[in-house]
Amino acid sequence: MTFNELARKRYSCRKYDPRPVEKEKIGQILEAGRIAPSAVNLQPWRFHVFTSRDELEKLHGTYHRDWFRTAPCVIAICGDHRESWKRRDGKDHCDIDVAIATDHMTLQAAELGLATCWICNFDPDKVRRLLELPGHLEPVVLLPVGYPLDSADPDRHRSKRKAMEEIIKYR
Image (cartoon, rainbow, N blue to C red; front, side, top):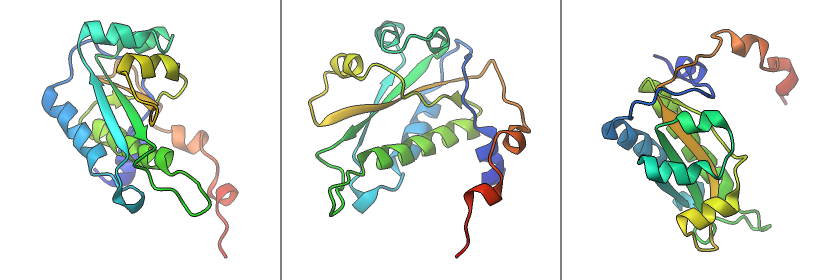
């Protein structure tokens, strides 16, 4: 599979098979995040893996969508603002670095036949309390992972993406 085929395969899944995801596959997804590039190689991410039913139930209270409860695994991806690189003008690259790691993880999951959905519309204070995070750690993404029970239109990139001429300027 080429990279573009893999990127097209990945989609936001909202219906998961309840069967557990194998630990080996979760490990491969976490490794993809671990090896992601980051500004000045500071790697300001932390991954919290939820697979037990009891822990997942606690996490479900942070994002109220019924489909979220169908995922057998959720990875809470947090950024460490004490470790992230800050540009000279003060811009903190923590979210950018976490986004790169998350993207690597979603693509690795897709290659393994798993699906994900990048969630940012959760209650960060509830997640922070659940994970007992200190102030410098921020929950940025909840990433459900599992075997999909839905699918995406294979031609969606033709109709749901802007045309190249809308987004590119050569200089």
